[in-house]
Amino acid sequence: MKPSNHSALPLSQIDPFVIRSARNLLEPGFSTGPRTISHYQLQYIQEGEGTIRVNDREYAARKGALFFWGPNTPHQITSDVNNPLIILGLQFHFVSSGCPVRFTDFPGYPTEWMITTQARIDALLLDLANEYALQRLYWQETANSLCRVLLLLLARQIQQLSPSTGVWETTEQILRFMQEHYHEPLTNDKIAKAFHFHPSYVNKLISIATGQTLHQYLVNIRINQAVDKLYTTNLSIQEVAESVGYANIHHFSRLFKKKMGVSPSELRSTR
Image 1 (cartoon, rainbow, N blue to C red):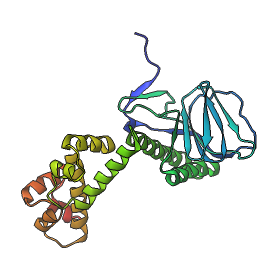
Image 2: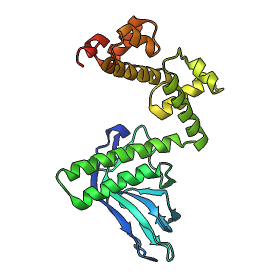
Image 3: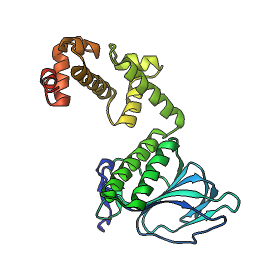
Image 4: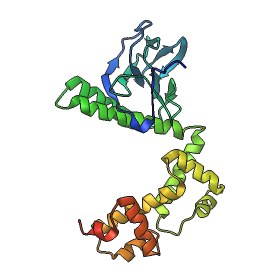
């Protein structure tokens, strides 16, 4: 078998290295001409219109669209004559070694898709462009960290939008319901019944969105709330347990120590 020249890793283990980041104002009718670059690229359309050709396929470039391609991929960017493109561009490696990667737990970034959280992506890419332009102390480390956040947020959106926006919206509603009702005696069946779904389907939605089972996600919400109460109130540990949905203090304490590494009383002693 021919050895692979790609690194295989979970998405959570990416360690990006930023090569260049900039906000590019293309002249009306400007075209880059066909070219290839030896690292990964993200091109986010902030304003304007045009076309982007990747591997001989042409896409309409419009506000909110994000394009991705890998090392040495032939591409060409052309700006509209009347409504020229403004692009937030990022060139990077997924790992500091510069080796191309494939993911073991993520299908990958599509060549083109529409961003639903435009303000957040705008802000991250502008921060990246500023770090690259100003190159102040620790700019490379800061840019690499911002790039990692960006890539993980984009991966989250890709997975949430599959197979449809309706599924993503339903999942968000379920997550909000759990965050608002965590203190109640919730079960998988009760949560599923609130949305008229089968419990196994709800669990699947939560697993896709969070990487956790429904039960694990609920426990994490409750324990995080308990930590806040232990730090900021004088409630007894029994009262804290009840306030986050656990009538049995021993069960609560076991779950708490498993997640936090210390007992509730030990955590409270550090405040």
